[in-house]
Image 1 (spheres, rainbow, N blue to C red):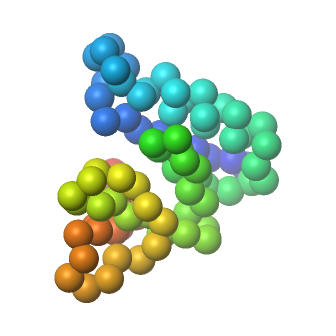
Image 2 (tube, rainbow, N blue to C red):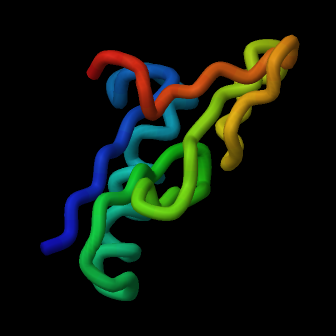
Image 3 (tube, rainbow, N blue to C red):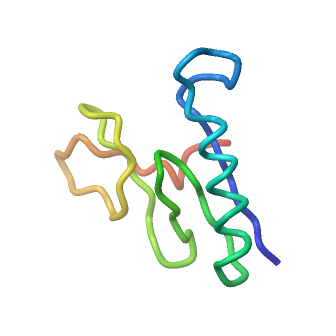
Length: 81
């Protein structure tokens, strides 16, 4: 089974939204990646079984890795959906 969670900074109806791109990325990754749970955001695919998904609060970029104490990164895998 393949599960992909997707999101966008702006809703699809807004100009400049990355929603369409993220949906396309999720569809492409569903055809190429093995079964698992993935997050498709910001042009990247994160495998939640092997990575921790974080977000840099200064840049807004999604990154892989566990946040370090005192860093600007929050662990979004533990956020409420």
